[in-house]
Amino acid sequence: NPEAPKVVITSTIPEITKESAIEVHYTVNGAAKRTTIPLIEGRNKIYEVFSDPDSLGRRWSAKFTITADWTPPEGGVDINAGAKFTKSREVTLALSASDLISGVDAICFPAEGEDCGNGWQPFTASKMVQLPAGEGTKEVRYQVRDKAGRVSTFRDSIIFDTSAPQLGLISAAYVDAPDYTLQYRVTDLSMEASVVNESLSLQRGWNTLTRKAIDPLGHQREMTWRIYLDL
Image (cartoon, rainbow, N blue to C red; front, side):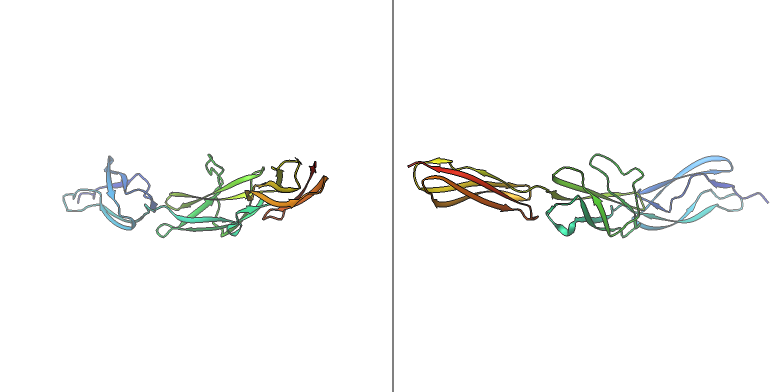
């Protein structure tokens, strides 16, 4: 009896892929061939015939299962439980990640303009990180990779503020009438800039006025101005 066709698959059949089809390379009695197998999203049970029938009607076939995942993973990141401001560089991230088809593979926290490289790590629902130095708005980038290799990026930001508010006098420091409107501006990273107006009655000569401002993080500053009334 003649021998059955000798078929050897020469390419690796993936268990999980993000592609819509796979190309299989194989040989039949030493002759190189290839075929493209279309996939549907989800689990694909494949029965593929790789050779024409021989004189006895024998064919060489194979069965395998491939999961095709075309949907990026979902997730999110929340800094300090949604706080808008922080006075510490150490912050806690609340993380979420899910992928219904292939599953979550790993997460990472790349800097802006950089990729994760070898920084991928197993998922954890909470992680402490250090913000970059310097006051201002800081953004945390969080990436989730599924087992098919698809990556989604999520972001959250917080204002890093270590300074007390600034108070700046707007009204005149030398006046010639006792009825006086004290006007000063308050600015701070964690507050909207505001202008304060107070109606006062001045005494002749030097008048010492002290005011205080406190930001949402508890930083406070007192400022003293001397206003001269010349009658």
